[in-house]
Length: 91
Image: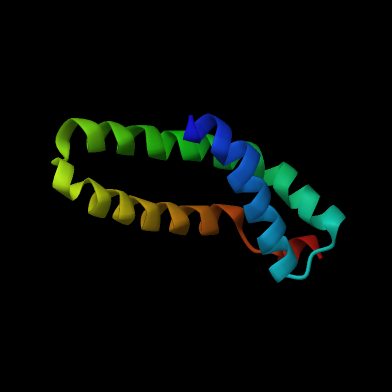
């Protein structure tokens, strides 16, 4: 549910709004940036998190699942930042 509901309808709108605002984009520039990046990021999201969660539930001991997901979350943050790119080309 989190990959199909929370990500596209809550996480990404907040991410693009906040990062666009922090980088000085107007609302229209931020919206254009979100439109260009949403589908590729959603595909990458599913390609990353579905295997991560499979490994977590099938192979990672219960007591190590939180550290495992924390490391995966750090990796995802890096991927998201690189794929979303700089907003400079929109201004």
